[in-house]
Length: 311
Image (cartoon, rainbow, N blue to C red; front, side, top):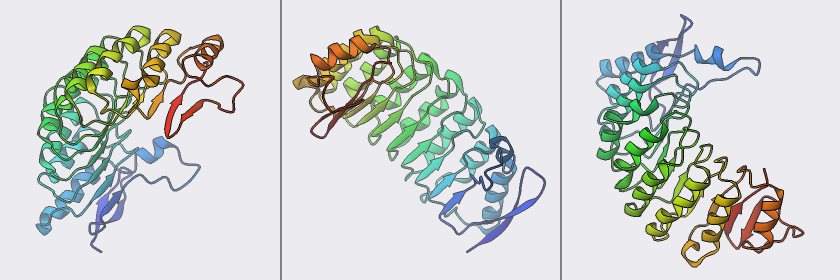
């Protein structure tokens, strides 16, 4: 145990244990407390103070997991975090959703990715950075990283341009990333070309989550080229809430049921405006799971799962 006192956003001070392998500042202790109130508890000053205390002791941070979710960390806090963790071999998991940082924070995360040799998981969802935050330093840092296994950049509004920078850059050749989520990022049909280029080159990725975007029927059909070029290395694909309609759902269902798609063990096509009649057509035809069968939204083929509904 190595307790130190750090400042809070409310002007008070709290005790943090620098010897604990888990630094968890997501503290919602009362059901009556709002997320906004919780976000004011810790900010960039708390992050800065933690690493200043470590520097005074001439010690590296012992944290293996850092969770700063739902705090007003901001770009300045992420910069302190990146500087304080440079070269740190202990950190394995960094959880930062809704930490209120933007493009500057993502650029700082690029430096952290390049300088933390054992980082396995990064969650940076719901921090609005646009394409500016992804291109440049973040992509470069990810390209220098060789340890990351899971990357979640959901609801960051990166758009097709930001996704293209990732998909045609570091994701195309990353040696260890097995899970990538780019959900809810305002991606449209044009992003399919970038996804296909990545899938053709990347044989390590196992789970790609693109739910909550707007690929549409054309984008869904275009993805078939990338899936075929991938050679069956991708095992899970999330395309829920993408407005792919019956046309896109039919094309992907055919792939799932084909010999080329046999290694795809999870395909999520829910909430794509397939319509009830379209659902009946797919289940009674291509999918071989009639509507009067026992299945609901989840259709099982041994250990494989296809999720599909009418809405």
